[in-house]
Image (cartoon, rainbow, N blue to C red; front, side):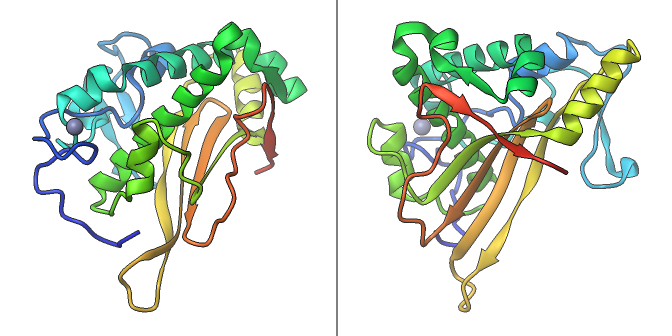
Length: 244
Ligand SMILES: [Zn+2]
């Protein structure tokens, strides 16, 4: 995966004119977590480790919550709509059942999607891969053909690992806020970080994550991965539990 690539105003998926902005944080996740807005107390989005580096967001449509023009509207809307719908269904389920899931560290995809759980789960993975691609394009990193093939119905790109994790520290935060009868919203991205080759031309490893409440979708790229790895393929999902 080349370290840098200029997209020159073209959609990273189909190569058409990029005229659409994808959300950095899924709009339905923002609304489920913080409400429809406009937010009476402006929402502080912390950009780095210091609160002083944050910025104020008035509502879920804020351009501050979106990527720049890196996709065409067809790819960002109708083409990826099934991915969005399956992802939303999963996240609704994970939120409604979070106490039990945090406790048992498992759930059944049949209870989320019914008979079509395999197809819907495949769509969830496609939504996440699309989200990763938007981050890569925004950072001017090459998106390889295996990833595009997957979104077009091909094999999963095995150089990417994808895992749904529960973070124990955030479970404690949420529990504490509920006990205090307070309000708690957690939605964040960790920075894309990694290592490049000696020639400084290609990424060898790259990691990042999307975090919703105590759930984390952790993803990593490694040029040397040879096997598919994802804990969202068996009907019974067993969580990795991250102690922080
Ligand atoms: Zn497109």
